[in-house]
Length: 79
Image (tube, rainbow, N blue to C red; front, side, top):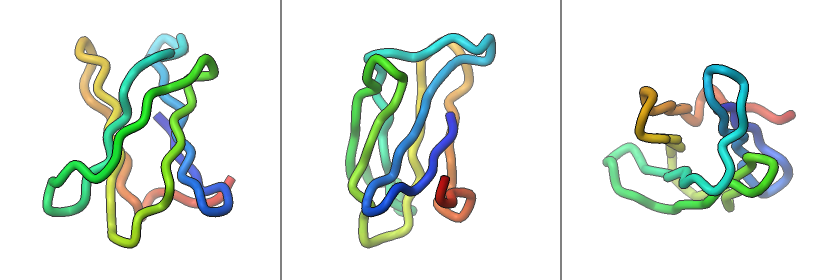
């Protein structure tokens, strides 16, 4: 999964290690106290969008059969 900021949105593109897309999967956003603060479902382009929260956060993509992918907010930049 890769994530970037677009204006007031966080955009995350999920996929698999073989390069295939991940359509209709949940991407969950947690704060640093491990509270679920938002969730989105990937669209037909494997994209999930979030409003940017007012706290530090990390999104997680967990497809269930591979290791979950976590992106820390400090690793995210504009595209």
